[in-house]
Length: 527
Image 1: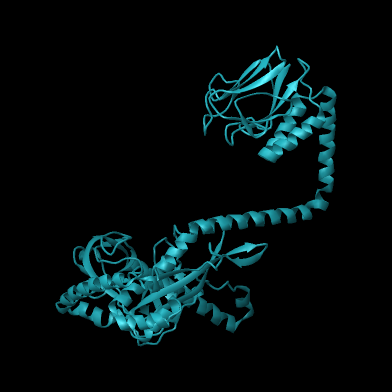
Image 2: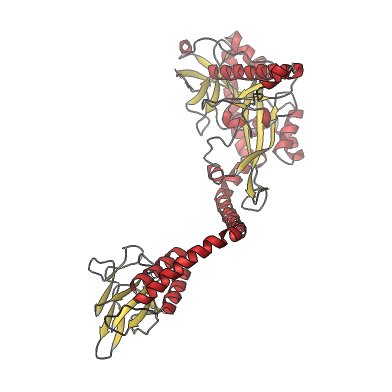
C-alpha cells in the first residue's frame, strides 16, 4: 500500500503524486520527500507520514511544526482515505489517499474531475486545469488517453464553431468582470489616498489654529521689515513692491477624477464616500494683455508629475478641473478656462493661462539679457507661500475672523478676503546662487503655494519662475529661467497668428484654396 497525495495548494498544487517511500518527511529540509519553501512557520522537519505494517495504516506525526487534519490540529493521527491535511497555519494543503494496487498508476476519470474541482476551489483555474491535464497523461489508462485526445479535438472544433455565436455574450461577461475588477482597484487606491485627501483639506485656512497664525504673523512682519529696508536703497525694487506686486495673482484650483465604467464617466469618491476633490494654491503673474498669466506647469496641470495622485493616474482615471480661478490684489476672483491653458512641450515647468482682465493690472517686465552676470546678486521673490494662512496672518485678527465666519469653503473664503483687500503676495529676498541652463538656484524663502511666482532681479525685471521649494519656509529654492516663458509666449503668438490666417483663408474660400486647407492649430493644455 502506498500514499497518494493530491496537492491542493503550495508549489505542487494541482499534482497528484504517488509515493513509494514508507516514511515521507514533510518540510523545508533538503532531504524532505515532500519539500516546501522555508517561509512562514514552515519547519525543516515539519511533519512525517509513516506506513506501519502491523496496523496496515499510515500515521501522520507533527515533528517541529503544526499540522491540521480536516481543520483540527493534531500531534499524531491515523490517516483515513480522503483526509484533508494542512501543513502549518494557512500552509500548503493536500488530500491524502491510499493506493491499493502496487505498481498501478491508473486513476478513475471521475476521481480526476473531482480532484480538479477541489484544486480549483483552493488554487484557481490554472492549477486545476494543469492538474487534470497531468492526471490524464500520467494517471490514466491508454484507452482513457485516446478518449481524452478525441474529446479535446472535438471540443476544439465545437468551440470554434460556437465561438461566433457566443462571442458577444462572453465579451459582455468579460467586460462586466473587468468593470468589477477596475471598480475594486479604484476603491483600494482611494482608500490609500483617503488620508492624503484629508491632509489637503486640513491645510485650508479654516483649520489653522490661532497659535499657528500668530507665529506666522510675527515671522512675516520681520521679513517685511527687511524688504522695506532693501527697497529704500533700490528704486527698481521699490517699484516691484509698489506696482508690480499688483500683477501677481493667487491661483486656486480644485480637481477631481473620473473613471469610465461601461463607457459611462463616473466621478470617483473618496474613502468617506464623498466626491473626491483635491484643492491647491499656487501663484501666477501677468506678462501680457489681454490676460496672459505665466505660472508653473504643475500649477496649471496639478496632476503633472505628482506623486500624490500617481496611483490614480496609473488606474487610467481622467483628471478634470472642478474650478480654477486667479485672484489679483484688490480684485475679485477670475475664472480660468482650462481649455485655454498652454503647457511647455520641453518638460520645463512653465505654462500660460489665459483670462479676461482689464488693463488696470500691471504687466510685469521680463528680463531679456544673459542671466549669468547676476550670479551672487540680490533677488526678490513674490508669491503666496502657505496659501491662505499667510493672508490671514497678515490681516487684522477681527477682519480675518469675520471672513472665515462668512465663508463656507475655500472659494468663498478667497472671495471674502478679496472683498476686504487682504489678498496680496508675500515678498521675500535672497541671493542668486547659481545660474544653470534650465535652473536658477537662490535662497529667497518660500514654500508650498509659492510655485509659479516671479523672481525679480536687482534691475526690477523678472528673471525666473519659481518652481521647486523646500518643505519649510527656508533653504534653497529653484526657478525656471525666464527665457523658457518667453519661448512659450512666442509659441502662443505663433499659434494664434496661424489660426487667424487659416480663418481668413476659409472666409475667402476659393476652390483652389479650399482643396489645400489644413486643420487649425490646437493648443495643448487640456485638463
